[in-house]
Image 1 (tube, rainbow, N blue to C red):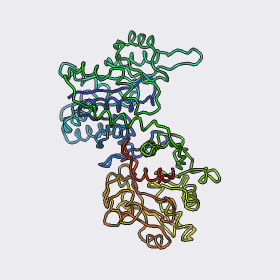
Image 2: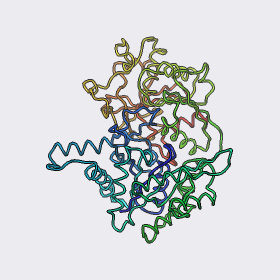
Image 3: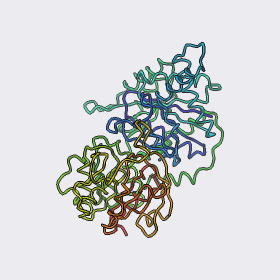
Image 4: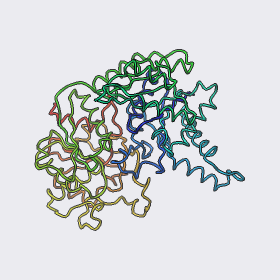
Length: 531
């Protein structure tokens, strides 16, 4: 098995996840069995309790992992489901080593970062590749070179190169920055030089530089970087701005990265992948096409960081590409919604969230979308608050609410899941992962999904109160899908509206470029007024 380790320098947010995904896609298109791992050096056990504004969205895997959003990138590029053990954190590694020490595994030894922590890191990485019989495993190390919390992981990766047979089974790709200053007009190499020096200081010589820049790297910039970093000029790769992240594999391919990696790995022969390339190129072209513009307002709590809703944004773009339209997404803060906002958009989407902040704005938005007959799609929290809005205004129950926000409300439309009542832990205790959903016939949901049963991913602690279902349905709301033997409502719809749907699950985690998730596609289609 071959390993490719992706590290980053200079600053965070350069796009290591996209570079990792792009390399993985190229090798997949070359006929190899590939997957990816994301290392997150923080002390949180997983991403579940982290603020999306600080860290980006929490991506949920089929097996219930609350992971870094780069796992979502891997899934979308490779069109495969990636399990939660592909996201490794400091807390997971240290917890296992400490537990082993308490169980007496290291009797007589002084347990240390080297070798015990680094051995556990190496074991976790290797087992993923072995268990899945991979040809190539690509490992992205989060953070930047020089961060103190990243050092044990970088040391483990260094050890893997040192111990792998002949060293030709491991390659390092270092993602850096070549900024262009407007006053000077040239691409600056010093940030990359210093970053590679720091990487070398801890014993790692990169094989490739993936250099982020606004415009393609100039020849003189490549020559200078090669001279000062010891990387072959042909392996200094330009990762310049593109119209879509899905163009990056093609940009890297044109620079010869696949042939270069195969030479370094000593791999002979490629499978015939022309059909796969044609399919992928069709997907890429659809993502950058121009068409009728559809304006969508995404009304949420975490709008100050676009990455808070990266999967939702991607799912909307997948749907738009499939329908041949362009999409304009405006992030609207649910705490300060402009007067008359709903009437200015073709569609309203409310993504997931938790807590009191901005809830009243979402309830009002859900009501106005119904009144103005503006296509509405509510995800998780947006599903729950749509039901609250309907109870308040269609059933005339002014104090209807969710017990998540008003714990002692007299009219709880949404309340705590029964199995959450005695659970005092916060991390990892939500209803997570894929669950089977049954869809009722002769409903909008059945028309959209064309199936009686689907599997979708969840992340929630509250649900629709069973005692309110009959009242809501008498007033005109339909609960068209359920799970767990009808104990949990999964989809609501209002037939009198052109398109009004809420889903308890997170369909965006199942959407892929070229394969849009059905509810997103139906929502965008309605917003675009397509037949």
